[in-house]
Amino acid sequence: MRIGPLREGAFRSRLHDPRTAVVIGRWLGTALLICFLTGLYSHVLQDPPSWLRDHLPSRPVDLYRASQGLHVISGIAAIPLLGAKLWTVYPRLFEWPPARSVRHALERLGILLLVAAMLLELFTGLLNTLQWYVWPFPFRQTHFWLAWIAVGGLLLHLAVKAPEIATHWRRARPQLAQRRGFLTAVTASVLAVTAVTAGQTVPWLRRADLLAPRRPDIGPQGLPVNRTAAAAGTTQPPTDWRLKVTGPRSYELTMDELLAMDQHEAELPIACVEGWSATARWSGVRIRDLVTRAGAAPTARLRITSLETAGPYRVTEMEADYARDPLTLLALRVNGAVLAPDHGYPARVIAPGRPGVLQTKWVERLEVIV
Image (cartoon, rainbow, N blue to C red; front, side):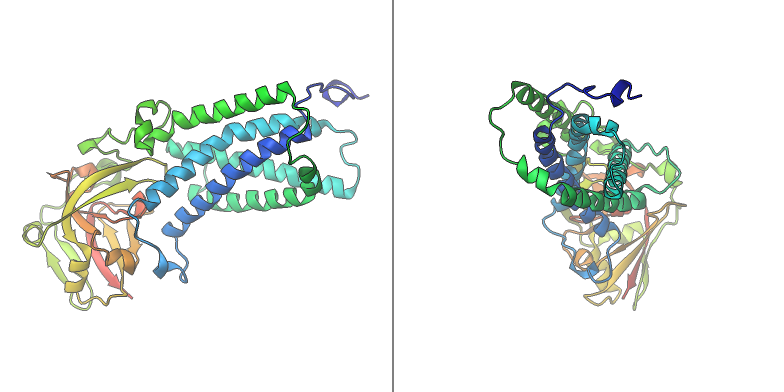
């Protein structure tokens, strides 16, 4: 017997129709496309393929800030859009018979994979903005591959549904008042979640930053902190700390010797993968001056080692364009004050256009590599 949601005529709302699904789908598709492209850019910066490594841009200085902010904003906006889309089409889950043919069964399995990938992608991404990792798998790699699964499933779904999408793409006549009300409510919900979270990236929305996990103006020296000195095991740097620069002409520098070198200032943002960003005035020694003194070639890259005892970003690499950029500093001060331990004392890297996880704190060694 066909009972409950399986019975014919169980769903009476006129909003469970193809036109509404197409409209919401266009909005959702736009958000997901922006989220995918900006996320791909962030992944490439953190793990560049060899053929692209020497072509990553260090300018404009706010490029990563804008890109990753847009990534998180579009990802959060996609959550209510995905909810609205699923509500519009969920009666089809109860179609009878469940599979009319092999093709129909494969289509439904593809939709199941697409929905599962999108839900997991969006909600793990949301929890990442909170730095709440309740799963046993590595976030960044899983997030990357889930994105490709979701995109592949979406393209397949669009190909299968292309005739139906084309039929309902243009505005229907006459317009349903119910549909207008529903779409207005969805638009309002998207604008609301954007307004109360985007302030961690967009300065003029900062006062409305009610639900975002970070306030970019709160933290030691007026900057937020993701990884503290206590978590990194660097609360007490060695009293005999020296910066080690290795290359064709290796050398070491004490803090006094670093301070005696030409000091430069740069106003640069810290922009983190969680979506928050904040600008500060940094001062220190240009990285290019340090590597030139070590005899580095103009095309040389750097390997940067931190004092922290463990962590996936204890050792990072910097491409030549960043290392030679005059704004890239081994920072010793921020906003006129000596770096706080949580901001990388005794020295940290600050470079334009890079993710915050690559702005290595508690620097111990700069190694010239080919």
